[in-house]
Amino acid sequence: MINALSDESPLVFSELEKHLLNDFQHDFPFAERPFAKIAAQLKTDEVTVISAFERLQQLGVISRVGPVFRPNRIGVSTLAAMAIPPNELERVAQIVTDYTEVNHNYQRDHRFNLWFVLTARDDAHLQQVLADIEKQCDYSVMSLPMQEDFFIDLGFDLKWT
Amino acid sequence: MDMKVFDPVLKHALIAAIEQGLPLVARPYEAIALQIGYSEKEVIEGLQQLQQQGDIKRFGVVVRHRKLGYRANGMVVWDIADDQVQALGQCMGQFPFVTLCYRRPRQLPDWSYNLFTMVHGLNRAEVVQKTELLVRQCGLEEIKHEILFSSRCFKQRGACYQSKHPAGVEKSLSKQDLA
Image (tube, rainbow over all chains, first blue to last red; front, side, top):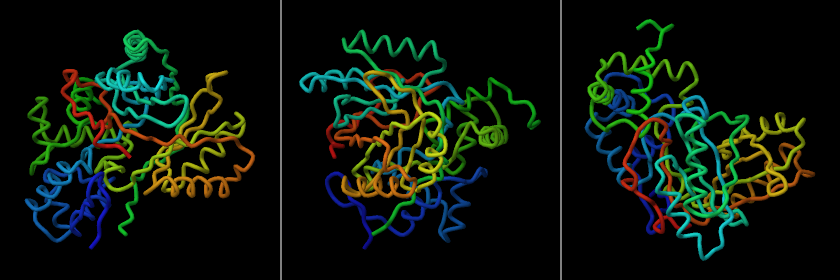
């Protein structure tokens, strides 16, 4: 049996689910009935494919079936970091997470221990949110906007062990 | 649709409707079309155009590495001379286990690193091992770097450029996602 580790217990995926996870990270069909097209490729039916995607989404192993936008082509974004005393981290992280403009927010083991990605329609809005976070949290924010992208996103090749 | 002209109203509506993903129904593009008041054909062609223009980097399944067992996520940061950063960034960006590779500004004196790569692994040892592979393959022995491991994920979802979701509605992964 093939499985991947979840946070609590191992998740077990069917052959179909493994194909859905690995083979459609790019070139998802732009067809009227994309799931039927995938089903035909995988020799199953549309309803089965849709239910499998539903399960994967419910399990949280896929965040979405949809676009990955090229940074700074649609709106603007930045990576921001804060150095927060450990006893304050929980409070500050919650304030940051509550902003809809924040889409990733991680604690990292470093003096700069809170790292998050901010996206916005335009730079003015982005700067406003950064300033607002500083004010709400009472700590300064270091903003590191992307200047050059060297990464060709071909999806992530999952190794089934 | 005339590919030379992209109705900006359609473009913005489309991005807002699609950025959190397709609805899981038989005709997802039609569902999006109904939501924004365009035809299914316009939605499909609009998405194809966004991809051709390079606004959409890829379209498909977006996995959560952590939930799939790739529990260790190391942000590897490098301090590279400005005249070398492009060549070395391109070298690192080609490895399949590198999932981001960006040049960013230094913020001296607090922050001297200017190249950021994301390396995922089943555990921290694997991230270290893959980073060592990068060092060898791209000749980075003399370059100062640090691996910043994530110890907790407070939030992870698709970018939200256009939509206006009410604050607080989103699911925060918080403690359940402790690595």
